[in-house]
Length: 268
Ligand SMILES: [Zn+2]
Image (tube, rainbow, N blue to C red):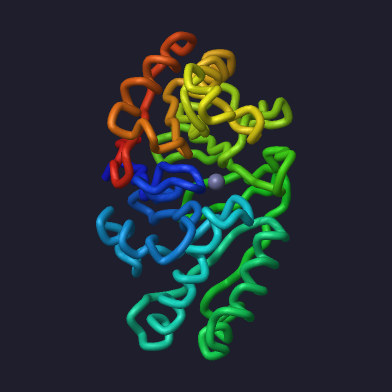
């Protein structure tokens, strides 16, 4: 079985035509869900993307912003009773930095029935990860790192696929030089592109601390990346997004460029 990347969502926080950026990495040895979008739309995306709830044993949450973390509460609400009733084999482990784990606990306390919250630390495990920490998840080695966000504290990761390829995820913010050792030379780079450079006056990516397809292409070329996946975009140009984002990234980057739609699965 090839390792695959199913994009459950590809949009930024305020998108209306696609779901918030989150994805499921699936290998023969298991999978990892990265972020959960902004609400219970995660259920529909998982269903449509053919990711069974029962196969989600590992969930990494990059940061506390609503478009990434709110869906986590819904997953806990769904999975906790499933485990209790024997309909979900094993446990769910949720990984995140200290602020993420704290936010999940507080949200569950405030928003979810106590019966469900009682699963935390028993069948739903909350695992705080630290900057530079290495962990094996579904038999694959991961290194989590602080992407040095100037907004909310955010972690990305670099991991090795079963076939030896490396994949780095920079979350939803621009690359910072402190991430170089994790990103340089990777086979796959997952990188945000808020909009096209040519549309910068319409979307103000730099004011919002985001980058463009052109910037992502330049970065990927400089860092010797082989495959570039762009996500966390605006959705006003959804109909032509693949074409116009690829066009810009190609101006600097000679590797392969992917601008996936929601529910698209990439073979890694
Ligand atoms: Zn976001």
